[in-house]
Length: 302
Image (cartoon, rainbow, N blue to C red; front, side):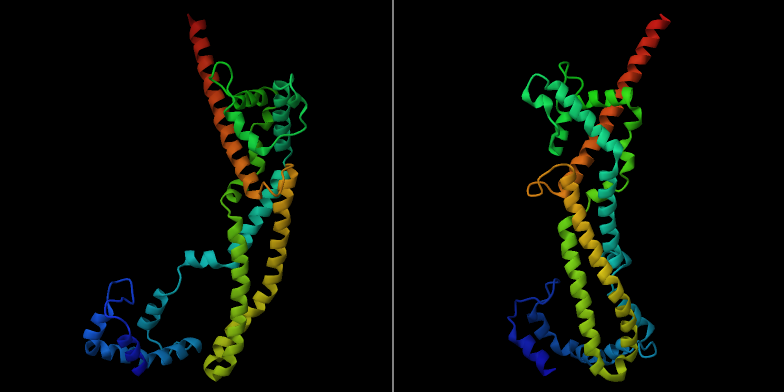
């Protein structure tokens, strides 16, 4: 209690130790009133700590366990912290990258786009291009025809629908693309470091608990099982991360982009945006064709 008094009396009276605006002036004023509660809390802290470490259900009451449970993270928070979630994210990156590079339909769509571009630029040097930048896909939706009603993307959809209709839903080959779009690569590197560091801290805690004696026997037994599982899981997780890193590079190279100026994230974003534009243009074409057919039917009826 002497140490507590020194801390309390050493602070300025207007300073607050929490977010509730409860100042040290108030604490000093009402110290005697809350003194019993503080003493009781400190008195039982060690006993409760030992009960937790010993996994002793007979020492703590149901209410105490309930209060402790309130301090624990929710299932949603735990899910964000699990190694499984990290592994699932890595697999999404791997699967999405594989699906893109192995999609023959996507490759054919890109070939059609290149062919259309070369035809439009037949009279200039760009008319013999062997490829194009992914960033230029966005221009398809903004390159308008002379009547300003359709874009080059509408024309692309029309060509595909008439000549190779099996390519209209090329994006169905890439089922993990949308999930990959929301992944932040920077966060993965931070999470990898956090997992490794946390594992090391748990091992240190386990080694340090040996000096606690019998009070932590059950705690150490439970922790030993966890460490045994983690020792097998961590190397495979790091191997998967290294494998995913190679996919991050391979996908950029696959599209002929410069890794120094174009990232995996940009590749994914370009494809997602192109697919959304393609869907809208195709639906617009279908609506226009339906209206046209309806008008022709009315004319025939007359």
